[in-house]
Length: 282
Ligand code: SF4
Image 1 (cartoon, rainbow, N blue to C red):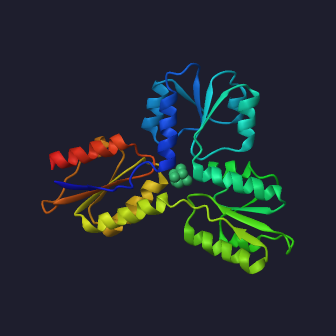
Image 2 (image 1 turned 180 degrees about the vertical axis):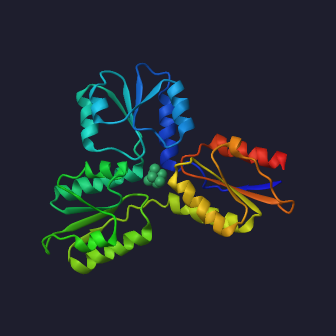
Image 3 (image 1 turned 90 degrees about the vertical axis):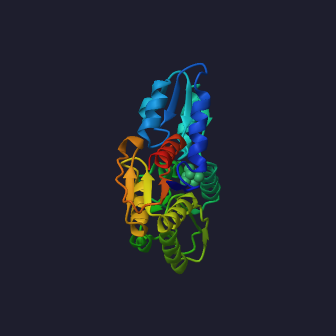
């Protein structure tokens, strides 16, 4: 069977960098913790747990740690967490994605200069919580155009708008437009990362050109589900699997070419396993 694997499948640059940093720490002295699961992939988290990497879920749990290394994941965290790590005399390995770090720097400086910070994103997302924690004043999180319409501040106030890295670009533009129509002093930093969009565009293109498409990713991964939706529209024989174990394909005889893509938290070795299996067994 001929197979095409999407080049932009699996880990994005920031997640790969973070996962690599955790594996680099294994074997070093003292306990190792990640602040939150390093990625939303049960197999990777389980593998790390077997190698002694523990997950700290919140500030309360962090406050009880007296020794060891804390690894900050790609989403980043609020400044208060760095302060706690330092005060408690712990080692810090910062795996915050540089694209997220850039947002922290912008909101920190702009709020220091007295600007009103608006973060376009999902208020419950850890990345957004982290960004909020770098503002020197109270930021506003806006997720919908309705919320943008309701936003009110002094008309001469300078507003600085940033975005969660994974926010939908079209929605971001609509929200920015509402602000620009209402206020004079609006500066906009488009901080959306295009890793997600590039992955989706490539998956769509491949799905449209193959006879069957396999999408690999966690059950609860929303970005994998989105990939599945996109590919299903282009290719009638689209399959959603978590690992090779789920792959019971009964491909129609006419299938000659299979495409493979994977969500952002799918490790490379799973993608490779599936690819090899399909090449050899069909
Ligand atoms: Fe990945 Fe982009 Fe998020 Fe960085 S900002 S972790 S590259 S999706």
